[in-house]
Length: 373
Image (cartoon, rainbow, N blue to C red):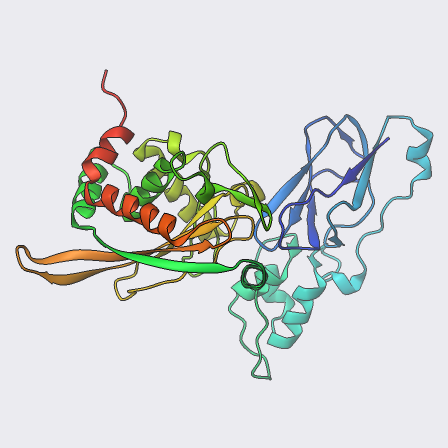
């Protein structure tokens, strides 16, 4: 017999939702089968079976579960324990829409009641398990009071912000960068590669190329005086298209060609639109780039992710007068950093390296292009 336990999927949640069993109670399973889908505040993740046997559920779909808790067991076929283990009852009627088997989690039902959302509307969602986030996506706004609860994704953001401000003694430095050449080079590369490519893609390439020269900028604090250095730059990039803030990670970005970085970021934007990030895409970052590149934004101070030492912010592109060219395109790029591990002088040198690379982008893109045969 083997217990099926919930893995720790992120540092933001103390409790998850078992949104769906992928294998029925009492059905045979094989090693590496996906058994169940766990919903966290930031993504869905599958629980994988470690060995073959017969699955028995310990909790029902729609129930909450903590990291490390047992949600089921796998027995050898014919095992006495299999017969002795009772089957899990279906959720109570209070947790279901009615006898059609629709499961509605308690937070979702509470929001339905406050917002006046009926079962007929919920059924049209076409999901087996209705979660609070599903009700929120309906745009329900009929609460009698003037209060509004944060969504699950925004609660995760709130936890990160609170923890960051409480534990990281941060400082901030900003440089002004002439991004005209970078914009021209990005457009040129976009035509050559036939990829969606702009300043964010170039910035990921620049930052990851500085990993070996600035190891503490990609380190993870272990205590007040010690940091674990990383083997590779895993660069998180903020993605927010109006459906929640996500920070997916470009893994080992220094080894990727510019076209590959563009493909990864395009994939992130598409996944953000559907809100279907898996936990693996949102973990493992050791540096974060926050994008505030709307035209009107002149300055943004990023939140340093707990477990990291800094975060880089890209503000919007502005036009300013230039004695020689008439006008030029500029953007402010700022670094928020943990002052325990990074000093102001080092932050300036890092930002100057970023500035130099963006103002001479042809060198960068040449190194990131595929070699011609």
